[in-house]
Structures are given as C-alpha cells and as structure tokens.
Amino acid sequence: MTSAFDAATPVEEVVATLDGLVRDGKIRYLGVSNFAGWQLMKSLAAADRDHRSRYVAHQVYYSLIGRDYEWELLPLGLDQGVGAMVWSPLGWGRLTGKIRRDTPPPPTSRLHATASFGPPVDDEHLFGVVDVLEELSRETGRAVPQIAINWLLRRPTVATVIIGARNEAQLRQNIDAVGWSLTPEQTARLDAASTRTAPYPYFPYQRQEGFARLNPSPVTNTA
Image 1 (tube, helix red, strand yellow):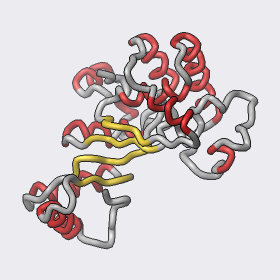
Image 2 (cartoon, rainbow, N blue to C red):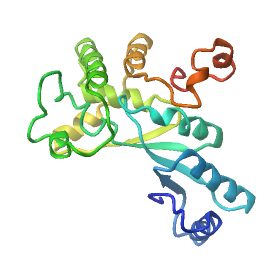
Image 3 (cartoon, one colour):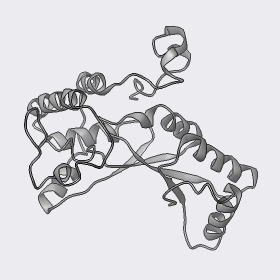
Image 4 (spheres, helix red, strand yellow):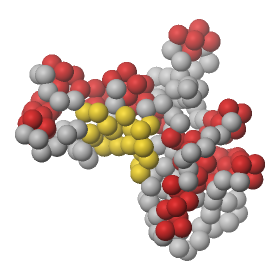
C-alpha cells in the first residue's frame, strides 16, 4: 500500500513497478492511502491502459464527523471497484464516548494528547453528532464507539475499519461493533446529525430533485 501520491515520479512508472511485484509473487494486491480522487483515477487509468495490476483498496479517513470521503472518493470507489479501509473511524478520539459538551477530554485520552492534530471539526457539529450517539447508546445498550463503527461498516465501499485500542477492554468493545444492526430510523438520525453542506461542485445540485434522482448522493445512499 502506497502511503501517498508521488508527484515526482511518472504514474506509469509507479504502476509498472508495483505490477512487477505482483507478478513476482511478492505481494498479492495493491492499495493506496490518502489519495485525491484525480490521483487515484489517474493511477487506475494508467494501469488499465498498460494492462497492469490495479489498486483495489484505498485507506481513507472517514467518520461520522468527517464525511468528505463521500463526495468524490466513495463514488469513485463504487464505479471502479476500490474498497475503503477506514482509518480513525472514531474521528481522532472524538467519538469514543469520553468527549461531551462542556467536558474537557480526559488527560489519558488520545484527543488530549493530540489536540493540535487530526481533522478540524467545529464543536457544535461534533456535539450534535455525539448527542445522537448517546441517545442511540441508551436505546440499544451499545457503547458510543460501537455505534460509530457499526454505522461506518454499513456504508457503501467500506470493507473494513482500522481500530486502535489502549487495552484489551477497548479492543473487545470495538470488536463488538459487528454482529448487530441499527434500525433504518436510527441510521437516519445519525445521517441527519452528521450531514454537512456539500462542497463545490456538488452543492449547486444538492437540492435539485431531478439531479438527485438521476445522480443519487452517497450521503443518502445507505444500501
């Protein structure tokens, strides 16, 4: 898995080198991490044109408080058959259940230790999502991080999530995010709380019924 797009090397050379490793039996499948849509599509097109091995996985940031992946990369993944391996599914520690309104993060939390890192998110949006997660936690008896991960695992293109745990209890809790389902109504509440205004060039069409019918947005496509 290549960790970032190499703008200094011709994409054809990168694809050919990786294809050689596949043909030699040294690796089985190819993946990338944190590519822009045009970078991934350019790489896939080069592989197709030269009859090389294609990327089949994309390691991406995606969470209930960071859904930018849905606008360009998710449709690309659906169209091109590239699955998502999600990193930081709990939004850089913000969706662990420890972060609440007017409550500073515990000194042992990941967010406290890395406050200056991670994707930006305004507090009101974060706590709006957390409020719904806590409501669903009371309704389902599931922990907040389990609900956040379960929602992700049911999104289009998502093949797996990459979890991090400080101890065995956290690991077991995260593993228990599978094997059960939110109801459609509960999923819709999470969708509504976490939705943001679409970026350009998508926002001019976001509210046009005819366009949405012919080009369904992945934000509302939870099948």
